[in-house]
Amino acid sequence: MLSPIARRGNRVRAGDFCGTQRSVESLELLGLRGFFAIMITGDDVRKAKPAPDSFLLAAGNWVFTGKCVVVEDFPSQVCRQPSPVA
Image 1 (cartoon, helix red, strand yellow):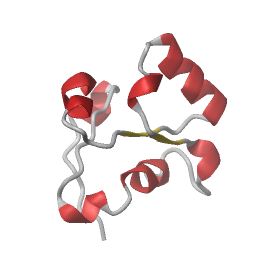
Image 2 (cartoon, helix red, strand yellow):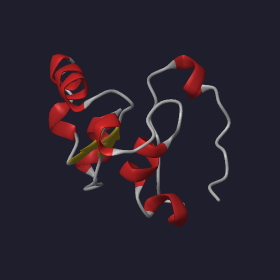
Image 3 (cartoon, one colour):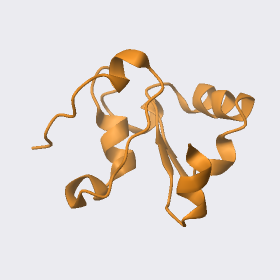
Image 4 (cartoon, one colour):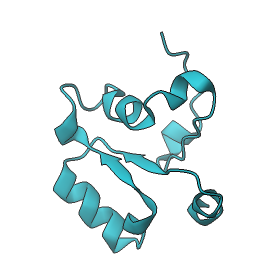
């Protein structure tokens, strides 16, 4: 799923609730680390889980342009309706 997005020249960012070390190790284990130009983790924000801060920081201004796509790996998050950003 990430390969076509990256091939089109899109900047791919990662947002994770976990700390940096665990996030990097997980992506490397899965062979996905190379896809992400920027990685925001729970270490980079004041409020981590359950707050969406790491995802919002990773998305940056894209959230407000409608050009942001989120790829989620946790079933309960995949099924959740997107919430409006205030």
